[in-house]
Length: 180
Image (cartoon, rainbow, N blue to C red; front, side):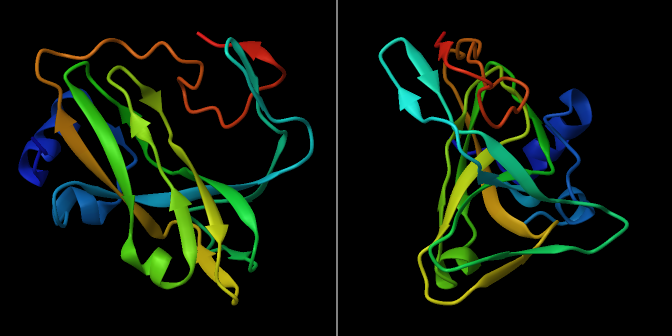
């Protein structure tokens, strides 16, 4: 079952389910979840990409834009460009919930394909998604814009603690590592 905004706001107050939510989400959230905002944009910057049975390695990244509440900035995603986008918000997911994300419709109406994921029970940190401008025009995104919608689901019987190495919101590996 998807948790509605009233229940989510209670959890924000009691267990800090999501930190750094926009004032809009704290007062008048829309739909059945929270919109999340663009906090950082990262480009792949060399290195290696490897996914094996027991080990993995992700490319180096370069952070090319970062949200600053005191200064409005934007990032221009060129046609064909691939970037990683991290949230402003930090998630603190209890063992009885999981989170799935959907891109806001303005993104795909503009040619931006966003690949989202799942936040497992017990995860703490920011979230990072992949984005590719599949259109033929640049897409300008202001840092702090709402770009994805988080929906929270109850896990009947409780989930198991997330043990993965992305805990804390890191964006890439530093070298080849053994997967947990």
